[in-house]
Structure formats: structure tokens, C-alpha cells
Length: 303
Image (cartoon, rainbow, N blue to C red):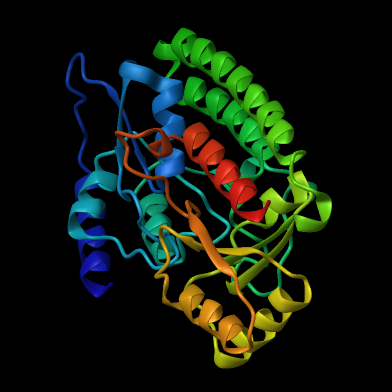
């Protein structure tokens, strides 16, 4: 981290010099998580250049900026991140970027207090996994579209067109997810995963959500957590539990073993995408494709 701070101090000196924007260069946006990268690419299309610093399967809770990331951030026209302390190890970097005059947007700031789940167990006192509410993502899409128009007015028509189209797609997704979830009896809507990332999903679609680890993957699950949740699984006759793409699967496997040691059976129902999207060349590399995949996986395994 000291190396990054040193780099940022050097950039502050560079920032004092007048910059010359290359003619015909694209508006450049640097993003953190894959969900944000996908959204900005949808809104801007080919009219802007989007550089994401996190890839598929990357855990934003533990991510540390590299020298290459700092270079990207320092050359951006706009920086967009999740906020609510999701990218906990990058907070100092964003603060330094603001100090050298870089414009930054935290998507969590777009949401009203009643749209954010409170939690005293996380650094920001809020659950940062805001993208798992489709309602939230619609609000964020609309407000981010307006922010991009303000920052890059030359591409206003593109942002408006793509934003309107994407909001319609999200509304269709919400209806589709409701239809799929209604095929699962209410008493079976209990979701047990590696860490507590799905509370917004649970609130929106009527699931009880239990995470083996806390809101942040930096919190390790202990033996008592495994024992407590294994008893919960047995009591509620839960058929399947789930691993996550950005969290090591060993804790969920330990939970499965604990249940089995007590003479009961629980399946690992599949891998869910939580803090990162999948391969960008596949449907799960897009927010809508990820959401559809997750819901289908959950419902199929719990029936």
C-alpha cells in the first residue's frame, strides 16, 4: 500500500501540469467490479472506453490495487465504484484520486436509505451487495445514465437510448425471475451460501438467506458457525447449499461434511456468482445473464 501511496503522490505532481486531451479520443471510464463494468459498457456502447480493474471471479472485498490499476485510474476521465466499503482496500486510493482532481462516482450514493440494508457487522454499517436487488440496479442505471450525460454531454443521445433500452430489459428480467421463483414452494425458499451476499435478493424475492461467512469474505467462518448452520440445515430439511465463484469452496464443503457426520444429506447445488460476474465471453459475464443463471440454479437445486 505504501508503494501505491507513493505513486499517487507522484501523480498529484503530474496533475498540477496542464493536460491536453487527444483529438478524437474517447471518453474513458475506469470501473472496479465486473457488474459495474458491464453496466457502463451497456450504457456507453462503442462511444466510450471502459477499463475494468477487476476480472471474473475476483473478490472485491480483498482486492488490492496494483501499479497498473493506479495508472488506469490516474488516466481516467471518470472513476466509478460500488462504495459502501465493498472495495475496502481501495478506499485510500479513491480518496487520493479525489485529491488530485479525479471525478469519482460511488453507486451506493445513488440509493435512498430505505433501499440499503443496514448491517452493524460491516465496515460501512450497510450491506454493500446492492446489485442483487433488480430494483436497486434500475435506480442505479437511471442515475448513472444522467451522471454520464453530465460528465460526457457529447454522447447524450447514446446514453439515453441505451439507458432506456436497458431499463426495459431489467423490468423484463424482474418479471421472468418472479415467474421462475413462484415454481418453488415458499417453505423451500432458504438459501445457504458461502458468505452473506444475497440479502438484497432474499428481500426482493422472499428468500431466507444464510451466509456461512459474514458480509465480507475477510471474515472467516469458525467451527461454531459451521455447527450452528449445519443444525439449521437439518432442522429445516434443506436440500442444497451453494458455493460461490469468488469465494473458496472449502468452507461450504466443510459445512456439507458436518451435516453428513450427523447422518443427514445435503447437496452442493451448484456455483453461484456473487461478488463478480463470470467469463465475459459467456452469458454469465453479463449482469442479466448472471442473475438468470443464479435463479435457475437455486430453484432447480432446492425443488
